[in-house]
Image 1 (cartoon, rainbow, N blue to C red):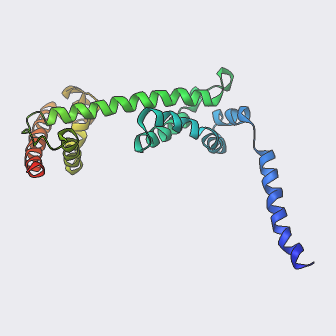
Image 2 (cartoon, rainbow, N blue to C red):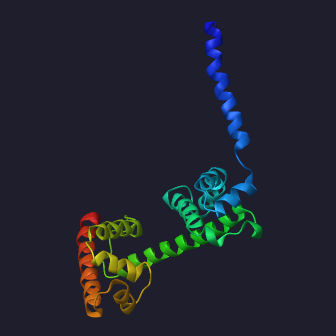
Image 3 (cartoon, one colour):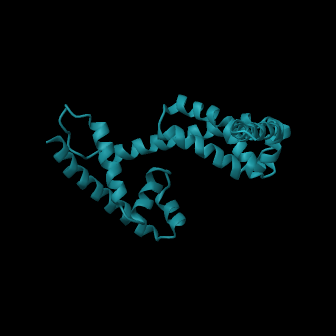
Length: 206
């Protein structure tokens, strides 16, 4: 066999394998059926075919960035873990994914709103900074930085109180901590955050 023939043989094999793989790949209906049955390969096919559509919805809602990426990932994770609730007879799989994506977008908007209200609650007593500084962005950065420094259970309690809107009693039930302990943690943590914001904010706006 000549060197030219040897060079062509692998390329022909690759093309044949690609053509066979394309023929073996099922249509959308079969992917949906296998997805509902728990076939992990079907999950990979579904992501390959419809992740772009889901991500496009998220980008239209939040713009390109981590929020859109998180919504895309959450949509497919939720779809896979909740696949027993999907029936191919009720409609196509991409339409079901779009419905889940809409819910994840709404959940993310709600989370962002809770974060905004947390910033407002904690920074309510902070001194007014120089007008030349964007105070909303500055305070948000400072607050999120301080939250990252909190240990447990304080951080978890604050997140339950402000990000999930739970009452003190509900937090106590969720964490198993006494109600008085929960209240003390929240009070002391808010005082600490306010103090840190005043110190960091004064340094930032000096």
